[in-house]
Length: 470
Image 1 (spheres, one colour):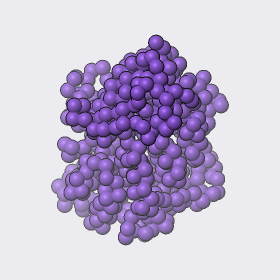
Image 2 (image 1 turned 135 degrees about the vertical axis):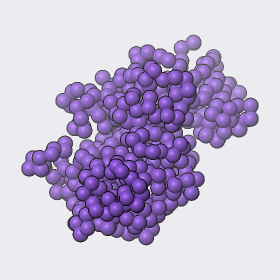
Image 3 (image 1 turned 60 degrees about the horizontal axis):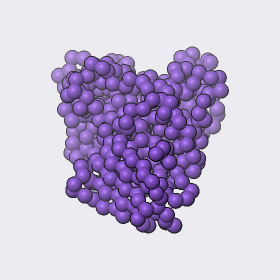
Image 4 (image 1 turned 180 degrees about the horizontal axis):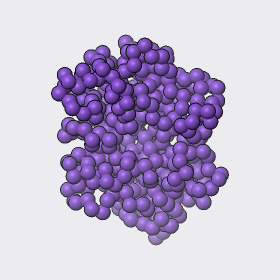
């Protein structure tokens, strides 16, 4: 029989059968349980005229099964069609990155995105909490991080240009931050929906907001540096004093205590070395550490962060520029720069998350139409691109492929200032990524699009302001 309900992502084994189940309150009558007969990632869902049951190999798999059940009951207004599903994900990391540093989003906006992620069995929310343009997490003992670093007096309008004379600003104060209690509440909200939050404290670059709050953390004595009001990459990076490393230990330790996830992202990307090259203090430190190249300073920061996280029982995650430094073997490398980085990271034995910018940066436009909102680039990443593009190098060996943890979409928010715009850029592209990250049975893009049309009603029910299909 034809599928009575279109599911996204498509379960790996789904059999619709004749008959229906009628229940005034399906959730209250769903039988659930953990079974040692199933693998930790597997769930089995059965709906028959007699009722509905869900068994799983772990609490995480149970959450995946519940989210599938939610799709089924949300997809029908009457009796629920009978179906048997046996399912498990191919990839452990099925993620969405949201940058709350360039533009701040209230907890309620993040909760809506978590609800939408859960519906698609996406299980990792990577929260980019700090950058040059804003510091968004309360840190005890460092009040100026949120008093000063969480706000900027104005924001660049349009794309970044090197020529400052061409820049236009909105003249509006922007900012906000999350208390530690708010973040703990968000962690609990996400956990109950099967979503793990992985925080990011980007270091040692992308730290201008922190340096604006505490100038002694920087490299230029007496300099008055404000929170960055333009996009691009700031030359202001962390200095090399003992005070800086104490600051990082305090920040990372507190963030590790807020978020129970076994991973903590430490950035490591786009770190200019200009200030270190000019700094007598940096040269002294290099001699002390036995370094001969300025680039080794960045590696020292990564090693320090990894040591702190190890003490807290956490695994460091970092953007793929850290491949240029010495890395602890446990580091998870997040690839954004292209297939060569995936090949290098996995050939060196590092677990890797694919976040390639040319396809999985969802701040890129979804078409070349002039009707698309302003984006960071003109490079298009369409719904079809996300569903069909080759995301892994063909040259990877089976051993290398086994090190690929999964896939993640990125929403950088230089040009995304509100929830409706965030949702428009995420969906429906995130539906396509969810299907690929889950490892659904291979289908053509046309088949996927046909299922997606019916699935959009579920996004409507969540109030998601998705981009209409072409």
